[in-house]
Image (cartoon, rainbow, N blue to C red; front, top):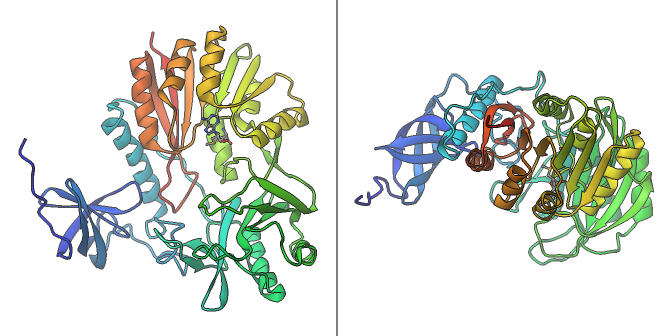
Length: 458
Ligand SMILES: C[S@@+](CC[C@H](N)C(=O)[O-])C[C@H]1O[C@@H](n2cnc3c(N)ncnc32)[C@H](O)[C@@H]1O
């Protein structure tokens, strides 16, 4: 087929009808059947946009003016919404966000997985989709002599200073404001990425579901945090919800937030949270879902899809601190949880003991290694649950899972593209996606979570 010359050039200004949302939350329009991605534009908008980049099959454009707004366009609540990279969809009505997320899952299943027939249910959203996040990671720096902390502006490492983030728990915002105050009071040098100098790099906050207990981590570039006792004392006193305070040392030039070494500064060592009627201990370096209310909704769906009767052996791959594993364990004969982060595995084991659950075994290491090994050793679980990171499962994981011949699989995913790819692979191994339920874990952002029920083909 003859290659087509793109019909647009960088710098050109166009008037466009926006018809869809891209997976980073940008509006999508077509000009002479050529796709253009326009950040901040919405389906239903008529816009004027300036082309900024042209590739072979698509281009990007910057929004210059909304000529006719979409009926679903709303006023964003956040005063720094346009500058901050944290949310992408605050200007879209919440019901429309939920519909767009469902559509993204449907499109990915059809386009990437070749799965057009699989029912995708309407996204399960939140009644009150604000201040839901239980985990904040605020970078801290200096601009024009002023200490700033908040979020990075999109595609940059410029910090947008924030005092009150609308999707964060209020306790996290209070910790942020107090840390900024203490940094100024004690003259703590803040980290400068460009020169790799300074001390304080990030402030992390985790808040337990009740909102009563929180943990903070001060991430430093150096082992020495000046005035650490004073800062710890004042911070704990100012925020009564803070029950645990850590320093984490990350001396590397890296975008990874946490370093290897953590020092306990004050309060208790861990944070304990409840999901449903189970209690979970969470260490600073362990993965933990960020939206507690929706985590319950997600896990309930995963459990429903697992459809356990009580006598099954189950594998929970990518188990984190054992949250899904322990819910499964109460309805199964035995659960094997696999997780690569040692601290998370230690938490998972402690969590099993804490909840009096004796039928869960946690295996430390990579799923890519454990699953083929368990398969070779003859383990034949009735159900396998996957909850991988965004990149999804490696082919050998899906192959080993299929070779174990479980009657069912449940796949929890935070990336519709890799979910679709992996469901496509599983279908070639004789496993059929029966239904998919999107759950809105991240309101006002472009992130999409979904859980799939997969049955062994008869
Ligand atoms: C999306 S989280 C899910 C955790 C847990 N199911 C939950 O709901 O909290 C993915 C987990 O997989 C772990 N992980 C990532 N890659 C892995 C791998 N190749 N093998 C084992 N664990 C892995 C991460 O450390 C993280 O805890």
